[in-house]
Structure formats: C-alpha cells, structure tokens
Image 1 (cartoon, rainbow, N blue to C red):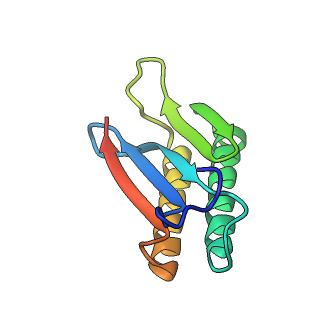
Image 2 (image 1 turned 90 degrees about the vertical axis):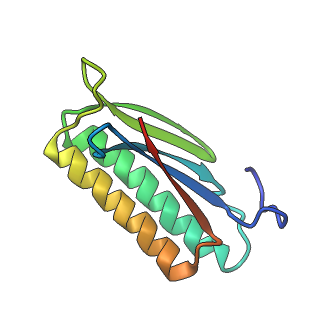
Length: 122
C-alpha cells in the first residue's frame, strides 16, 4: 500500500502472532505511513509511532532476540529464542501487550474501517 486507495479504505492491517500458549510473540504491520487524507493522517501517525517505538524498545530495553524488518509501509517484528519456541522475557511481553492495547485503542477511537486486526496462532 503506497498511497491511499478509495476502493480499500483500510490503510492498516495489523497481524498479531501468538505462540501455542496464546502469548503474544510479535506482529506484522502493513499500511500507509504518510500521504493519508485528512482524518486518516492522525491514525497513520498514531500507528506508525506505536510500531516504531515498539520495535526500538524491544531492541534497546530487552535482551530478547527479535527478527525485525522495517520498510516504508511494512514492519515485521517477531520474538525468537534459540529453540524457536517464540518465548520472550517478561519485559518483551509487556512491550508487545502495550503495543496491542495501543492499536486496539486507536481502532476503537477512530473506527474499525481504519485498522484491520488479525490474530494468528503459530
């Protein structure tokens, strides 16, 4: 998604990934981070801020290993451990839960038409 598409009004798709124990272990965020029309720009700014802050916080404030990739309209951030069980520290869990709460808060404030949320168990 590089520009606003009136046929597809959801500028953001957020996929939350959970392990077998339903612990949040990462996310993928896709969507417009700029050039959104009036009204969408506040949603874009809020989601972008949460995404970037969460990735940087996981990298700087925890010792967890995370697979992270960021491009203009796409971010992937998944926790990894040596046995690939997708378990993270308590700090990482709190940061990811905070991110999830923030995304749901934005969607609840501005409407489901602006953010599509998917939950995936790995």
